[in-house]
Length: 330
Image 1 (cartoon, one colour):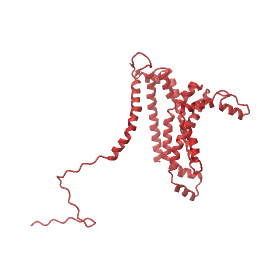
Image 2 (cartoon, rainbow, N blue to C red):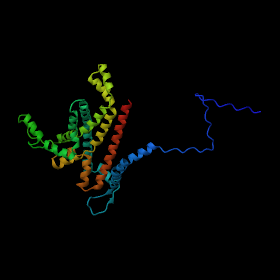
Image 3 (cartoon, rainbow, N blue to C red):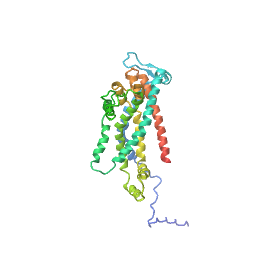
Image 4 (cartoon, one colour):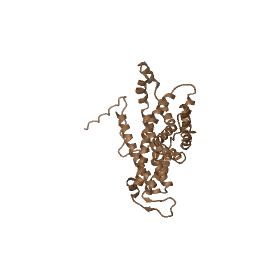
């Protein structure tokens, strides 16, 4: 006689476990990941715009860089291969201005990124206070961001005018009791790039300030109260509370400023064409590409310049991200 099957063990709450589903019962199909679908739907307009206005033009620029294309020429495009790229690095007539523009771009970025980020952080800390009419001061510092860069360049062209009627020369003439003469700030090779840097920082620092101000307002006030109880100095509060609290925001601002600093073009073009700016001292890669395309009518060469510059910026951005990630891990 076969022994009776042992009863199934009871669960901790005293109830018997439910019997397993028969092997022949089909499993219920899984539902699609709704969050993933919703994310794709919400990002579709941005991705579509990115592909349409960035991806497609860049691919078209890569294709044009392999052809000899002249703007307004009745001749059809002629395949050039890598000749345009070879000329950029080996032809003295083309490699000289391109390398000079690249050095100017790097100089501009090396100075502007730390300077503008530090000024934005200082202004954000200064305006992160509960005072009357603090919103007015925040708006005043943010106001230059609203102005187009072309308009800002025109205003600074009046400030830095070479004659004695220039606002800066006139102010220095008054302060020095007539001992300061007219100085060509834009035409002098030593001060031309410095003028562009000051102009750009003045126009863009308000945008970074707003981002950092939002990051400062996310730091819990209890941390500062605990620092007060520990009798921490203002520098210790800044180093051990403020900086760790906005580290991610600060990294984002620095990377954004780096990308924008490589796109400098408007202020250089406006001041070169109408303000007597020293072209060789302030020539940037974007300026070189635009003038090659529309002044020299060489679309193929301009496309090759933009492709090379894009690859250089991508490499520098990846290196920067690597360094920042290593610093955060430490």
